[in-house]
Amino acid sequence: MKLLTLSARLLAVSIGCMACPGLVGAHEVDDHSGDPTYARYYRQSVTWGGCPPSLFTDGSTIECALITVPVDWADPSHGDITIGISKPLHPPHYTRLLLVNAGGPDNSSASQAEMLEQFQPQVQVDHLVVGVDLRGITDGTGTQVSCDYATRTGAENFMDGDSRNPTAASVRAQQDWWNRSIEACLQRNATFLKGIHTPNHVRDLNLVRAVLGFGRADLLGVSSGSSLMAYATRMFPDRFDRVVLDSNMNWVHLDWQRQALKRMAMDQLNVQQAFIPFIARHDDQFHMGTTPRQVMTTFQRIYRATSQHRMGSVTPDQALGSLDGTGMWVFWDLLVSPSLSAMSQALDGDPAHIAAAEQIAAMTSADLRTLPGFNPMQFALQCNDSGSTDRRSVAQKIADVRTNWAIGASTLVDNCQNWPWRPVLDRSLESRTTVHALMVQNEFDPSTPYSEALKDRLASGFSARMVLVNNATTHGVMFDDNPCTTDVEFGYLNAGVMPAWDVVCQAKPMHSFAMQDSTTYEYGFPAVGGWLPLPPIIPQQGWLLNP
Image (tube, rainbow, N blue to C red):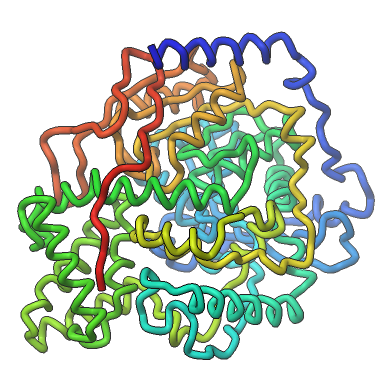
């Protein structure tokens, strides 16, 4: 009955949108391409050269360039900055342009584009694939700034190395420390940071299209990149054509803090229901036990040992930091398995095992107690876009952290509490436009929950279609070679064929480079045929951590 009700709602929303052509055919925002004030940006030449290595790729199959953009598109007299772009060294024949954003939001789109070309070579069919970095990102080649953290008082929540065990006083001290840190940062970099927001990113994207000599471009956005590309189609619907949004944020009403709260609960559910059972099925890699309860008992022992300083310099936050990578299978062999395996071995007290755990812990998670500075880009983006919207009390934040211990501590501090500028997202533009796109989504995605993606789909009516991977537990669909999803994606991206209705694909068993399961399982509502299932119920009984 619930599935029928959901389908009826989809149909009603779709028919409603068809009856309101004014919502779909909104007027395009002026991109200043005809304004002499902006001519030097549109007429600039592109000089390609080498690319630096990044997290996943060595940059050997791509080349990079810098594009000059105004720090403030509303007033170019404030000066210029640069952003990085990439393209294949030897692209095959193409007539179309595909602009790629990696999300994060602080991820290199150069490496994302290179990975796409390696994992899904059909992405280059008739396309020049160009990765476009957001302004200011840490792993990019364009203009960046770095800011110093304020002096720590010792009372902040993370000062014992255990952010998941907060008190009201320690949370308030951490909030004060952050406010002092970002205030000093803003005093030195106000003009640059004020210009970091999604509308300016969209204008940068549109400029790259024009500078490369294309009248139109196709778009691919992953994770938070889905919100960028969705907003791009709202601002410039006549400039962007085929749009694929992979692992969707709630871009109907983009709100970074509310998205983080949704992610917090879904990530916890995924760790408990999907990843801990996966660890138990691969004890030869993790060495934590062969049942979920044994795995959790081992992890509790690791957490307690680090809390009691019995594992050298490894902190509880570093132990928990190893779970931050569980949402993407490419991390399981490279980060999660080595980290948890080393820490479980170090429980025996052997100095050699402890030294190995210390070494990998330092690679896994930065220690805020000693970290001197930070790149403010992602905080500026979130605060400029949607501002402070987390209305939880300190007591509720503490309760949420103890329930959602995997990443809940990341929501304790309001990064936008004292932000000096009002949010810039145009809510009127969101309300009067519809996003035309093909959405691809994993059902149990821990980072961009399906519940929020479904809101996008419902609000878009016939303008969007969703390819849902039933029972898939990871983040990022494009890197998993599932013929059901790739056939639909590239049928649209390469041939322009949008499916007539939503498509439900079945997940392959959980797997990584070295670990393969033989069966799939489900902890949400079952999909029936081609109907989109309801999102999973988030509040479920779980295990608590005790220091």
